[in-house]
Length: 117
Image (cartoon, rainbow, N blue to C red; front, side, top):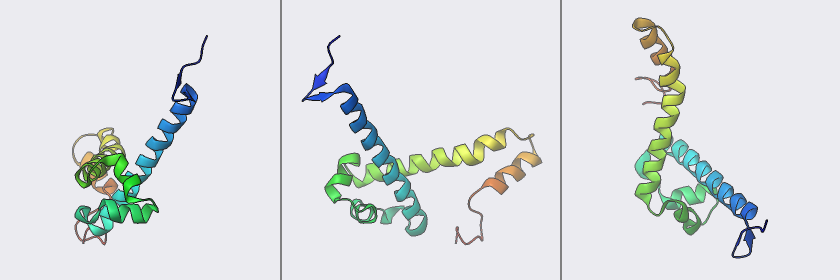
């Protein structure tokens, strides 16, 4: 069976390139979330994040196409993370006060805490 090639690259080469890009994008979003938790989402820009990641602005821009898309992906990642580590486990706890306690205990921020001030 003949191997499929595109621009001289094998299917395996293309998969490796795709995976590297996906992994890089995930790392960018995780770093963006860390920055936004310290500086606020509005301070996470293509330029700030590129500097933090030691990437060129154009290299980072290629993953998102705009500051707004970058910020949306950061918010979506934060929501997925919160659901995975706070909401889903709490749904396994008995309804009522025990579930509410579990949600509060798992919540990464609380009013009056250092992270929320």
